[in-house]
Amino acid sequence: MRRFAIATAAFCAAASVYAADVKVGNLSVDDIWARSGQPGQVSAAFMEIKNKGAADKIVSANCDCAKATELHTMTMADGKMIMAQVPAMEVPANGELKLKPGGYHLMLIGLNRPLVSGDTLPIKVKFEKAGEVTLQAKIKDKAAHMGH
Ligand SMILES: [Cu+2]
Image (cartoon, rainbow, N blue to C red; front, side):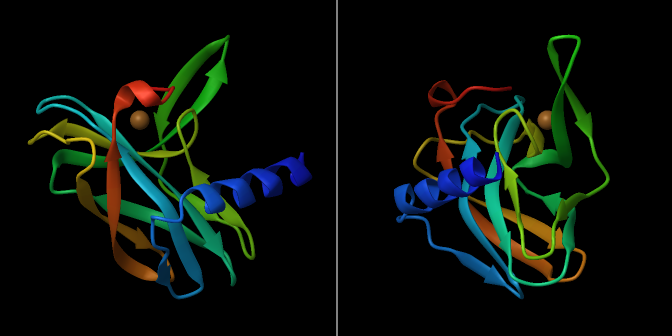
Protein backbone atom coordinates (compact mmCIF):
# COMPACT_ATOMS: atom_id res chain seq x y z
CA MET A 1 0.00 0.00 0.00
CA ARG A 2 2.81 2.35 0.99
CA ARG A 3 4.74 1.44 -2.15
CA PHE A 4 1.68 2.04 -4.33
CA ALA A 5 1.16 5.52 -2.86
CA ILE A 6 4.75 6.52 -3.63
CA ALA A 7 4.53 5.25 -7.20
CA THR A 8 1.32 7.23 -7.76
CA ALA A 9 2.87 10.41 -6.39
CA ALA A 10 5.85 10.07 -8.73
CA PHE A 11 3.54 9.59 -11.71
CA CYS A 12 1.43 12.62 -10.81
CA ALA A 13 4.50 14.83 -10.43
CA ALA A 14 5.67 13.81 -13.89
CA ALA A 15 2.23 14.34 -15.43
CA SER A 16 1.78 17.86 -14.10
CA VAL A 17 5.01 19.57 -15.06
CA TYR A 18 3.06 22.64 -16.18
CA ALA A 19 2.03 23.38 -12.58
CA ALA A 20 4.85 25.10 -10.76
CA ASP A 21 5.56 24.02 -7.22
CA VAL A 22 4.78 26.57 -4.57
CA LYS A 23 7.20 26.48 -1.67
CA VAL A 24 6.34 27.73 1.77
CA GLY A 25 8.80 26.88 4.54
CA ASN A 26 9.32 23.11 4.54
CA LEU A 27 6.24 22.55 2.42
CA SER A 28 5.86 22.36 -1.33
CA VAL A 29 2.42 22.44 -2.92
CA ASP A 30 1.79 20.96 -6.33
CA ASP A 31 -1.01 19.93 -8.68
CA ILE A 32 -3.38 22.64 -7.46
CA TRP A 33 -6.74 22.64 -9.19
CA ALA A 34 -10.38 23.52 -8.68
CA ARG A 35 -13.53 22.32 -10.33
CA SER A 36 -15.35 24.63 -12.76
CA GLY A 37 -18.76 25.92 -11.68
CA GLN A 38 -21.47 28.55 -12.04
CA PRO A 39 -22.50 31.34 -9.63
CA GLY A 40 -24.55 29.98 -6.71
CA GLN A 41 -23.09 26.49 -7.08
CA VAL A 42 -20.43 24.80 -5.00
CA SER A 43 -16.97 23.85 -6.16
CA ALA A 44 -13.97 22.17 -4.58
CA ALA A 45 -10.21 22.62 -4.74
CA PHE A 46 -7.51 19.97 -4.55
CA MET A 47 -3.72 19.80 -4.24
CA GLU A 48 -0.75 17.78 -3.08
CA ILE A 49 1.40 19.01 -0.23
CA LYS A 50 4.81 17.54 0.52
CA ASN A 51 6.54 18.21 3.81
CA LYS A 52 10.29 18.04 4.39
CA GLY A 53 10.07 19.13 8.01
CA ALA A 54 8.02 18.87 11.17
CA ALA A 55 4.30 18.16 11.13
CA ASP A 56 2.09 21.06 10.09
CA LYS A 57 -1.57 21.49 9.28
CA ILE A 58 -3.97 23.51 7.17
CA VAL A 59 -6.05 25.50 9.62
CA SER A 60 -8.11 27.58 7.19
CA ALA A 61 -8.58 28.51 3.56
CA ASN A 62 -10.18 31.43 1.80
CA CYS A 63 -11.27 32.19 -1.74
CA ASP A 64 -12.94 35.49 -2.64
CA CYS A 65 -14.77 33.53 -5.36
CA ALA A 66 -17.13 31.99 -2.78
CA LYS A 67 -19.32 32.96 0.16
CA ALA A 68 -17.51 30.44 2.35
CA THR A 69 -14.43 28.25 2.04
CA GLU A 70 -14.43 25.19 4.29
CA LEU A 71 -12.09 22.30 5.00
CA HIS A 72 -13.91 19.07 4.15
CA THR A 73 -13.30 15.37 4.08
CA MET A 74 -15.28 12.51 2.55
CA THR A 75 -15.61 9.08 4.06
CA MET A 76 -17.57 5.95 3.25
CA ALA A 77 -20.40 5.11 5.64
CA ASP A 78 -22.99 2.41 4.89
CA GLY A 79 -21.84 2.36 1.28
CA LYS A 80 -22.42 6.08 0.85
CA MET A 81 -19.94 8.92 0.56
CA ILE A 82 -20.45 11.31 3.45
CA MET A 83 -18.93 14.78 3.42
CA ALA A 84 -17.96 16.46 6.67
CA GLN A 85 -16.26 19.67 7.72
CA VAL A 86 -12.97 19.22 9.60
CA PRO A 87 -11.23 21.77 11.86
CA ALA A 88 -7.79 21.15 10.27
CA MET A 89 -5.92 18.89 7.84
CA GLU A 90 -2.70 17.33 9.09
CA VAL A 91 0.44 17.39 6.95
CA PRO A 92 2.58 14.68 8.55
CA ALA A 93 6.27 15.28 9.32
CA ASN A 94 8.38 14.27 6.31
CA GLY A 95 5.24 13.08 4.61
CA GLU A 96 2.49 14.35 2.38
CA LEU A 97 -1.14 15.35 2.36
CA LYS A 98 -3.22 14.88 -0.75
CA LEU A 99 -6.45 16.72 -1.34
CA LYS A 100 -8.30 14.80 -4.03
CA PRO A 101 -11.82 13.91 -5.18
CA GLY A 102 -13.33 11.43 -2.71
CA GLY A 103 -11.07 12.61 0.10
CA TYR A 104 -9.91 15.86 1.65
CA HIS A 105 -10.85 19.00 -0.28
CA LEU A 106 -11.35 22.71 0.10
CA MET A 107 -15.06 23.31 -0.34
CA LEU A 108 -16.02 26.52 -2.13
CA ILE A 109 -19.60 27.26 -1.11
CA GLY A 110 -21.80 29.74 -2.94
CA LEU A 111 -19.72 30.81 -5.94
CA ASN A 112 -20.09 34.51 -6.71
CA ARG A 113 -18.69 34.23 -10.23
CA PRO A 114 -18.25 31.54 -12.86
CA LEU A 115 -15.17 29.34 -12.56
CA VAL A 116 -14.15 28.66 -16.13
CA SER A 117 -12.01 25.74 -17.21
CA GLY A 118 -8.49 26.89 -18.12
CA ASP A 119 -8.55 29.96 -15.87
CA THR A 120 -6.56 30.20 -12.66
CA LEU A 121 -8.14 30.85 -9.31
CA PRO A 122 -6.27 32.33 -6.34
CA ILE A 123 -6.97 30.56 -3.06
CA LYS A 124 -5.40 31.49 0.27
CA VAL A 125 -4.41 28.60 2.48
CA LYS A 126 -3.21 29.08 6.03
CA PHE A 127 -0.84 26.59 7.63
CA GLU A 128 -0.41 26.53 11.38
CA LYS A 129 3.41 26.78 11.20
CA ALA A 130 4.31 27.72 7.62
CA GLY A 131 1.82 30.61 7.57
CA GLU A 132 -0.47 31.84 4.83
CA VAL A 133 0.17 31.31 1.14
CA THR A 134 -1.81 32.24 -1.95
CA LEU A 135 -2.09 29.34 -4.38
CA GLN A 136 -3.08 29.56 -8.03
CA ALA A 137 -5.48 26.73 -8.74
CA LYS A 138 -6.02 25.65 -12.32
CA ILE A 139 -9.72 25.37 -13.09
CA LYS A 140 -10.78 22.12 -14.72
CA ASP A 141 -14.13 20.83 -15.96
CA LYS A 142 -16.25 18.81 -13.59
CA ALA A 143 -16.97 16.12 -16.15
CA ALA A 144 -13.34 15.03 -16.23
CA HIS A 145 -13.37 14.00 -12.58
CA MET A 146 -15.28 11.81 -10.20
CA GLY A 147 -16.58 12.81 -6.81
CA HIS A 148 -18.78 15.51 -5.51
CU1 LIG B 1 -17.09 19.31 0.52
